[in-house]
Amino acid sequence: MASKIRNVAPFFCILLLLACAGREEANVEGEADRQRPIVDSLNNESSASQGWKEPMLYVLGTLQDGGAPHMGCDRPCCRNLFLRPATDRKVVSLGIADFKSGSGQLAMFEATPDVASQWHALQSLSGLADVLPSIFLTHAHIGHYSGLMFLGREVLGATGIQVHAMPRFRQFLQTNGPWDQLISLGNIVVNSLAEDSIVQVTERVQTLPIRVPHRDEYSETVGYRIMGPNHTVLFIPDIDKWERWEHDLKHELSLVDRAYLDATFFDASEVGYRDMSEIPHPFMVETMDFLGALSAAEKSKVHFIHMNHTNPCLSDTSFAYRHVVASGFHIARMDDAYPL
Image 1: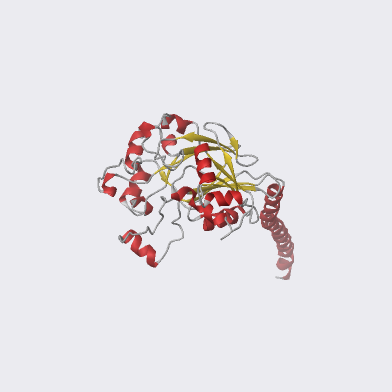
Image 2: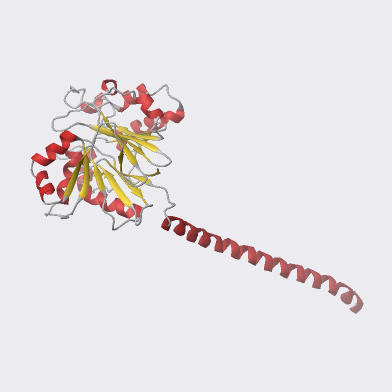
């Protein structure tokens, strides 16, 4: 019996040595796996610090000028929001962050009544907490520029915020209060844009103002083509009807990688079939029908934005929302991020 044990003993020793070696090798591999995220994280931080991180576009708001809950609205869509405000109901705005130049650069498209929270959101999302954004305006309707008032002495008391507007809009700001006071006190500096003329937004992002037909009581109305080093975005939050535009929407879509388009109303029933000459906007169903023959890839570029408080697409459980998505389009969402 003793001899049998002696004969088997070397075999067990060999197995023990192999097992130990296996555990040691596994431990080395496991340690490498544990270290890899740390190394990658350090590499990412190093890349960002050296300016290798691509510029980003953020959705800071998706609603029409009056926001939600809407003043004077007693419908369920507003009643519940008066009781329990929602953090994702902000007036339409986009933000740009460029991490290349020094500590970075920020820009906002539109200065809405929600500018305080949107300003903060842009700084937080980008990590550029101490950077003040420049501002690009589309037109002089209250949801798109009235946030400028918060830059004055009553609130921020800013110095030299760069604001970009079309010539007639610039003149309107210079000759009407309280906006002229922002200029005289140096809170803002208003730069004049030119139609179809490229302007620098940040070091690596440019934009092209494009005139669109809309109610131009106090200013021109423009959309923007926003061009980064890798991707281009079309932003048209307000337009009367696509057929009134001298540009072809389908062609404009072919020039960009993503488009944020006017989605004020879903269809005619939403506004009680009223005369749309007073509030001209393309219904979402009209836009989808107009673009319906495009490829799935082209349709998927469209992200609807600037929704009225009555728009059923504000609820992702509504038939309207499901219809838009099933048709190959998208609804813009707060805090969405898109690399430029």
